[in-house]
Length: 501
Ligand code: HEM
Image 1 (tube, rainbow, N blue to C red):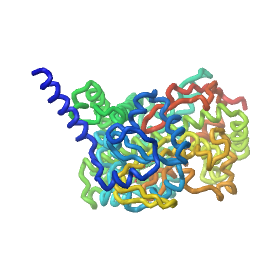
Image 2: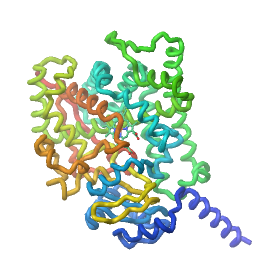
Image 3: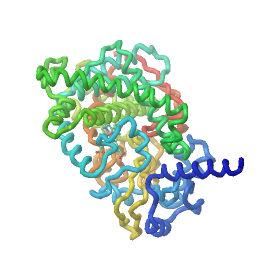
């Protein structure tokens, strides 16, 4: 009797796991896929995932980097039942990202679906096309310029918090996270967070936990099944975090909607007294024309709140680390600021920003070594022909390692060194355009790219003019967690000192 029960339980488990692998590859996919170069791992279900269970999760990047080097920038393997191509070769990446048809995200994205639902980051097909078209004008440069004052105000507040650390080495991520959240709340949602409002710290921490817990589901075959996941304590803590995240954005939407419905403030008046329409107003306005319901608005607000603060603050955290670790770069960047501002602490104007050529290069180099989105995944709906004649079949998953593409020794000399001069405009002309893709590329590139670069430049300019940064971290020794947004395995401690002017 007991062996039978055990056998039934095992069959049920296998059924749940197999069911959770939502795309069962066709025979054609498997046939064509098996012609691609790759290691001779276990076939099918676990495939290369088997190795990942044996190594420490913090060592996944070096492990994949080694394998990519072995196979020349691309290899094929089975990962939890799914034929998966892993790549860091710009030629392959170009073939994938330039397609207008292959716009479906990989199956792992569904684990953040309880949080971001079917917003622009996760949606596909006609729905994604319509949303992209509808939301793109909100990120027009002219609109972004109008929000510069709000960005400066936000980073000034962050600067005060940084100076209050009085030279003690601290983890800057939560401080920068709150700063970037304040900015996206005010500039895109028209919602000003009070300085002592603790909900923003709660939101930033809940984002980190929610992305960490969703990633656990990618690597644990048991947790892939919703049925099994919902029986675990992890599901309960995840639900609590989702309550915090949705509660926060729900309040923002309700308040803005009430104001919008009363038609009192269709145009948001910011602290400078300037009138402007924010992203959420555009969404509310569109909800009438395009028939968007409350859930449609919620999923976009959740998506932009997450994408709009976590990646930018992560980028700034690594940028601060590189400046602190390379005093000569920090001094050169500071000198450039002095040439533009003297000792003034005024807000940067559009003209000031256009003169920050060296800072541009520093930001680009930091995004090369530490792109906040280290990898992105696609599920192919049509075959992709590679320049070498090989074909990646429809039904396969493609995992693009942005971080390893940026360190591919075939395209970058001394790839692990921090050298902003690499981004001298003349040198950039000769580089493969898909060897540097911190914001992805093609039709599904980052919609907030200009916003992010503007916000980062204003942030660094504000901080660099007032502070000197030091660290004992050696970035070459860093290990990283396998998460949606790049995170060091141990916090990076940076000391902030006021500059003696
Ligand atoms: C340094 C900061 C940022 C970096 C490095 C970055 C990077 C990226 C990358 C790599 C993607 C593609 C993701 C994928 O294919 O899975 C993406 C998509 C996206 N990003 Fe960003 N991002 C940044 C900041 C922002 C900001 C500030 C916003 C909003 C204000 C934003 C909104 C989005 C959205 C909505 C998408 C999905 C676009 C689509 O699928 O059509 N991002 N970002």
